[in-house]
Image (tube, rainbow, N blue to C red):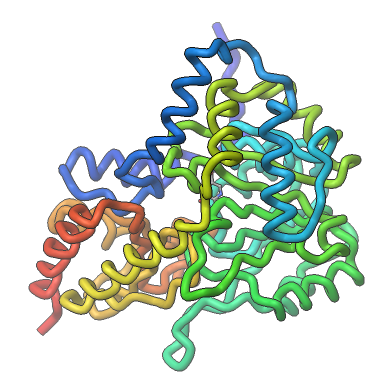
Amino acid sequence: MLNPLSSKLPDIGGTIFAEMSALAQECQAINLGQGFPDYSPPDALIQAVVEAMAQGHNQYAPMAGLLQLRQAIASKVETQHGHAYSAESEITVTAGATEALMSSLLALVHPTDEVVLIDPAYDLYAPSISLAGGKAVRVPMRPPEKDDPSFRVDWNRVEAAITKNTRMLVLNFPHNPTGLILKTEDLDALEVLIRKHPVLLLSDEAYEHIVFDGQIHLSPVSRPLLAEHTVLVSSFGKTFHATGWKTGYCCAPHHVMREIRKVHQFTVFSVSTPMQAGISRYLRESDAVSGLPGFYQKKRDRLIAGLKNTPLRPLHAEGTFFLLVDASALDFKLEKELAIRLTHEIGVASIPVSAFYPDPGSSSANHHLLRLCFAKKDATLDEALERLEGLKAWLPG
Ligand SMILES: Cc1ncc(COP(=O)(O)O)c(C=O)c1O
């Protein structure tokens, strides 16, 4: 008989995203929970992938990715951020941002290393750090207040969390779930921090092309000093409405990328060839990304406008396809309880923001906030808004 197993991740169950999606399905609710669009990738991109298959691009791609795709990524990143990566040695195509993040953490974090996370934090980081043998050190953002109803990163607190054991700081801007983006003063603060503490930066930029109100996405790699320390991670799934294709990439200085590739080659070896061929052609032949901010800003604004007829108050969203809503007008204790009740009784699934904290049941994780995904057809958003109007009946008194 098999000896009893000892779990490497004893505290981890299924993800909140899968849990809320399953509940949405069970309740036939509109799923504004998990972050995926309910519309298709661009026709020209689908066509490019289909043609790649028909033309025989169906066997293993090179371990680091098709060279033409890496060249297209190098040119895109240089145009965006003014930093030139070598397509040969500094860019790897990965199975989504997920694999880029996991491969980077497994390759770069050693047992007993500390990795600083800023809460609320995407759920992948902490378990991946544990698998690498490292320790996550969590620094909360300042939660929204009455006078300033936005999350804020306090870089002094981040710096104070850095010790001689710190290997890495994980960044995620545009930020899931708060929608915050990095500003010039944030990059200034990061430069000061890196000069004092030369740690690695793992910069998850999965939502790099979704930034609103005429602002632009500032990556740490736009500053030469920070670029030397940074692993930039992104997701074609988020950018091209194709989350199911699980294609992304990472860029890093070559001595760092050499280590990441050692893990990448033994986890997935390489990524789907026709997807890579199709994406590289689409990036070369189309203006693939410039319409995204406008496209998503309209959806954000549609959702914000409709929420006026509900007790949910939207927070300001600068980027990503998520909107946080303040539900403090309703009577409930834990965000997760509210999210479950909302799915069952109103027919709209959301994600409790508390799920992005290490202890989702604690008061420090519960700020009366739900995350709504607006990467949905207008008709889906309108139907969800109509249902959410039903929340008025829940108002106490
Ligand atoms: C912040 C963040 N990073 C990474 C990912 C994963 O991206 P991918 O689907 O490309 O693996 C997600 C997906 O929701 C995300 O929100």
